[in-house]
Image (cartoon, rainbow, N blue to C red; front, side):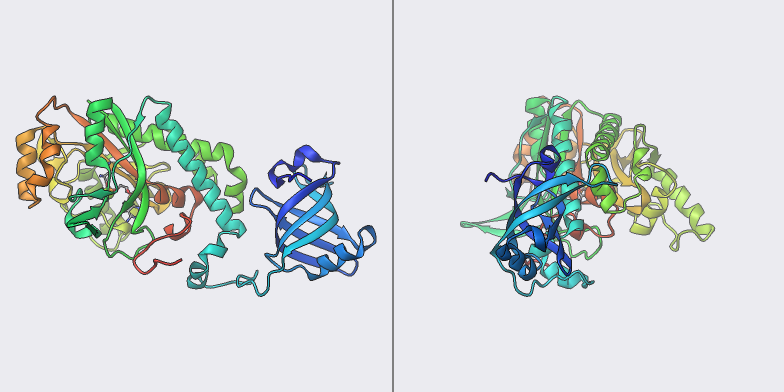
Length: 436
Ligand code: 4AD
Ligand code: MG
């Protein structure tokens, strides 16, 4: 018999169907069995009564263990008191493989244990919900740019040089040369934006920084749009439209998963443009004021980069993401366009998610002057020969342009309301985690 997926079960009420999946959980009381069955598309409670099935099926019901693979036939019906919830009356059950000693039991496990068993942990309800939200975020990201005239131009993972600075690069052997795993597609995006006007790339990026925080992965997925002729304000407008769209889509299609995660969706429902725009100088003033009132521990000094408690404080002032712009050029990357009115400031923006989820987007306007860019490359002690092609973009029809990068995992952590990014990607790579 053809397989029916649990996600489609509502269309088969009263018909006999075949489900193929795994046993999630079992309860039985004498002659009645309650089997929670999952098939990847969803979860359903199967009810089986000894008097209604043959002896082999009843023996399987008694024998079947958590995460055994099973196929069953039965007749679905709607739950009498919960519309939209289905149960299935099981007619026959076959064990495909009987699982012995499944390591993850319904009892509590420590995080390290679960991370070591990530390949199995993915089967649990909560992980399932998170990764379904992740998938929807990725779909929304692609739809947003695809529907807005952006051309997908993916950028290479092997690169000959640094984008954001060499200290955080993974070096790999590349035949007789050295190469680095990319930490951002941005420099290449600037070339594709000059070719296509609006371009984006979306792929894995790598950071070798030895940060062991709740927000850092060594491998993460970043989506990066880049727009020719865009100024900083345009970049901010794009970022607020984009993030609002992504949040809106998850609210539209993943309510059940957010409920499973006990996410307070009222915190997401108000996410809409315009987002507050806060100049760095003003952020410093707010932080110093907060410090004098004892609201943040360390006094923040102008010229520093925002630490996590600073970001948390600032984001707590608003009900939507806040866009902090015009940081001191000295703490930002070499390619940033200086503010013509205050050349010590970079025309850049960091978007901080609400509720203390930290920076989700970083971007800004890129330097368009050839000579100034060359000077910055030298000041940063980067090898100019590696950037000849990048400098070419400033020789042949240079224009103001800008864009940003959003880390998918940070976005998933925020939207799902997760403590740590380790649960936002199927197999996280972190400072002390390369397995499974
Ligand atoms: O702020 P970042 O470093 O910006 C860039 O790489 C720019 N070149 C992007 C651009 O303008 N095209 O990184 C962008 C975003 C951050 O805001 C954050 O969401 C995410 O990437 N990110 C990380 N996510 C997880 N783990 C890490 N170690 C991350 N580092 C950055
Ligand atoms: Mg950043």
